[in-house]
Image (cartoon, rainbow, N blue to C red):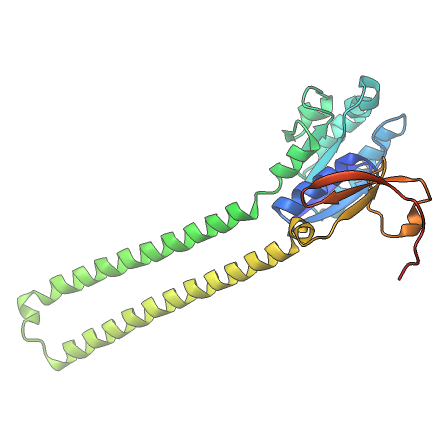
Length: 266
């Protein structure tokens, strides 16, 4: 339900994770604890971030990582203090440091090693299509099991009524059987109603998830502008100066642009 992320707030890593989770599981909540990911102070900040999540226990899993770089850039994730902090943490940690060919000590002590941050996001976000498919299969199995049990009960009841003592049953036996038939009928109706209600709620949730999917917003003609090279979302025209480059993401790809002049904001 909730994923904690320990990485830089301005790098491409956080944008990649947000993009993957937005596409696969927009219902998952993200909590970013920004830290340095290279330099002399990076290791201490990473340790402090892990301890904060450990103290509050407000996430289900942690992703710790950064993008690719030189061995020197990735060195904070080889520090002993970082390795010990990851090993001691009771919250499951996915280490996603660098590219697939980069191996750090953090990768070796973490619960799971992901070759890239994008893969880490996929590991914590089973697609909603798979979840919906699993739920539908559960409903189908429950309904089939209920029908099988009812069929067995009816067969047993028919065997009882074939006995001599039931060939000429009295009124009391007839009333008991009628009550049993009514109870079974009500049980079947109640189970079918609950299954239909659950399916209706599931379909409603699926429609909401589809509407909230960022990709569907882009499909309606909208686009997202991000500054370069930070790739942070531009929320105001004043965030850029004349001649500043920026990148525009659409439903069918992205392109680069340059700001030429200011227009009046509304």
